[in-house]
Length: 166
Image (cartoon, rainbow, N blue to C red; front, side, top):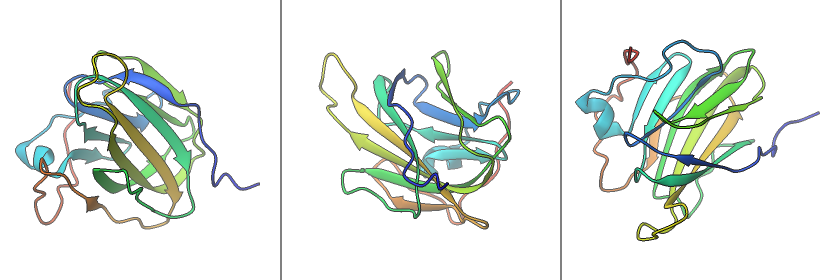
């Protein structure tokens, strides 16, 4: 059975501190400290945990899916791909001081595609943005900024290390 095309139910999550974290379920200290380089590239990365900068600190939609290839949607204003190794317990998506959602993504090595889509920045109620996470099986994925908005000015090479926030 192939899991390509599998989608988990869409969730709503209140974003705080302008970041969404995705990490191996059960990880101690899953959030990372951000340095200036992380802010400029839009993410922090360390083994088992990645946090992505968001478009707003508001209620947002979060979508998780499995895919066959890294393909950026036309509606995305920001797209970043990073390597991600999923452990045996699946993954958790959360923001600091917010709800956490567990997803049973199969254990393995993936290219994790993060896409930020602006829905309605001026909306008083409802989500301001949608964040898509797509897991694409890959043995040696390489990090890359695939689409950048005006907030990003990534360093070369990308900073692929971070310290846990404790």
